Image 1 (cartoon, rainbow, N blue to C red):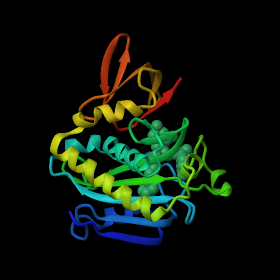
Image 2 (image 1 turned 180 degrees about the vertical axis):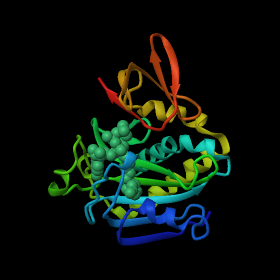
Image 3 (image 1 turned 45 degrees about the vertical axis):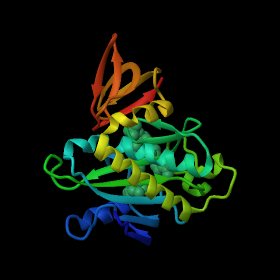
Image 4 (image 1 turned 60 degrees about the vertical axis):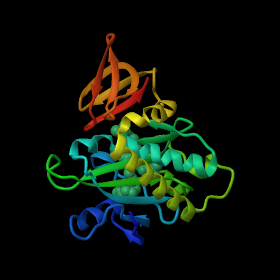
Length: 245
Ligand code: ATP
Ligand code: BTN
C-alpha cells in the first residue's frame, strides 16, 4: 500500500491522533510521527516519557482484514519489526519481552502500544504505537522508574532518525503483510531467538495475583507459553506483566 506520513512537532499522543481519525480520515498503513508528546502513554494508562526531539514516537493505522482475534499477536509482530529495523541498519541484536517491550542489555529500549478503536470484539481498527529511545536527555531520564537504555548507547554510528523511521515503516509493513498472509507461526523462530526470558524462570503478574513459572516462548497466536508445575499454559495478553526472577 502507498504510505502516507504526517510529521508533527507537538502532539498529545501519536496513538490518540490516529484513533481520532478512525474510521474515515485514516488509510491502511497511515503513519503519524511527532517530535514531542505531552501525553505519551504506555499500557494501562502509564506514562511514556517523550522529551522533545530526542526519540522516535510513531504510530501506524492498520485495519485487520483477518478479524479482530488477530489483534492479540500485533504487539509481537510489531516488536519483531522494530528488531528487524535495528538489525538492518546497525547490525545490533536486541531482546524481546512478551508482549510489548524491546530491551537491550536487560534495559528497556522501546515499547509497543496496540490500541483498538471502539468495542474490542467488533472492531478491526488498530493503531500500532512505537516509542523508541534514541538519545535520552538526563533530565527526562529522572522520570523513568525502571532501567532504560537508548539506541545511541548501543550503536557506534550517529543515528539518523529520518532513515530510522523510514526503515521502521518498511519493516512494519513487511511483517504485517506476513502476519496477514501466513500468521505468527512463520515468525516464531525470529521471536524465540530474541526472547528475553525463554527457558528462564519468570513471575507473571495479573492484578494482585502472581504466578511463578518457566517461560517457554510464545504460540501461533502470540500468547505467552508459561510452564507451571510441568504443564504449559497459554497466557493471552491483556492486563498481565512478565518479570524475571
Ligand atoms: P509491562 O509491559 O511488562 O507491564 P512495563 O513496566 O514496561 O511493564 P509498560 O506499560 O509497558 O510497562 O510501559 C510503561 C513504563 O515504561 C512506564 O511505567 C515506565 O516505567 C517506563 N517508561 C516510560 N517512558 C519510558 C521511556 N522513554 N523509555 C523506557 N521506559 C520508559
Ligand atoms: C509500553 O511500553 O507500554 C508502550 C509504550 C508505547 C509508546 C508509544 S510512543 C508512540 C505512541 N504514542 C503513545 O502515546 N504511545 C505510543
